Length: 348
Image 1 (tube, helix red, strand yellow):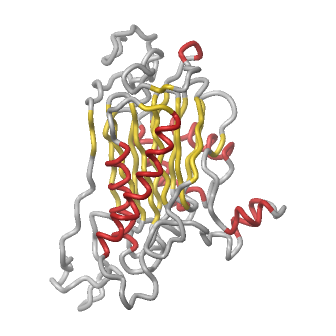
Image 2 (tube, rainbow, N blue to C red):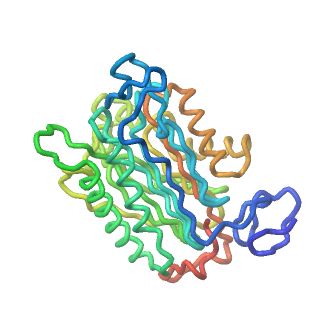
Image 3 (spheres, helix red, strand yellow):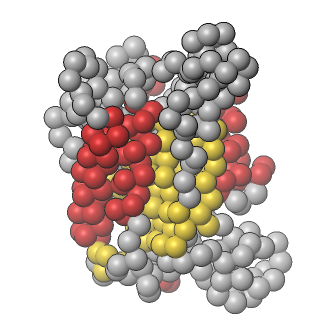
């Protein structure tokens, strides 16, 4: 079996190329790939009676729940990068959003979760995720520090995109807002930035997994005071976020963190619709590994199965899962700060 990207001969049955990480059996990824979810029509129309769809997602005339392009969609910009965004079972609309891109060997994953039941929070999350992705989808070689700075710029662009998308806030008691988590996967280096409680995990094929991000939430503050994690996250006030994007945000400067892979694995970026049912990094890793064994190595298939699993647990919230495959052999992990999108071992 020969890798379609680099020509390395792989052992029969291998899922990924050991040299460059390409999913075997798939064609080589494009140099630049960005996918968009379809935009909603300006005035949604009921498919049953032709009436107008209200902001809550139901027809004003007959009460039928509208079908939206936002209810469920998949992005697969390369064989190593993919995600699924889903409305879940209990919500009337999908206020989650994701935006994925691949530029050369660098993957970009952005997930935003609109604050529930506030008008236009779905608009805010989609505008924010796309704006951040567009800032991060650069082919210019970067260092760890410059990626961190670019994540801060991306968050600012996302916040401005919300303001542009939702317009005048005069007279609105609750302005639309959303969480923000973005990761750049550049060779074996993963740089993440976040505001709120959407999460980024590093899940190696072997060894310990960990959560890269640190929730900006009341639950995390409770955990810091010694309250057990499960109790804090299950509490009524635990999901209150302490930082976010939107017109009423006190700051839109994200925290950032860097992880350098010591071997192959997955970067997983999710909304709380998934981690509500599986929070600890070790448990998330077990779930992902079992899922990959079941559905195979394609990231969109894994993400879709994770979403299906979360819906089976109850689907109480919108659910988003986005993945990027990291192939970082032990002998090629870089030690210097420069992480070149042109020379680093492929991550996506």
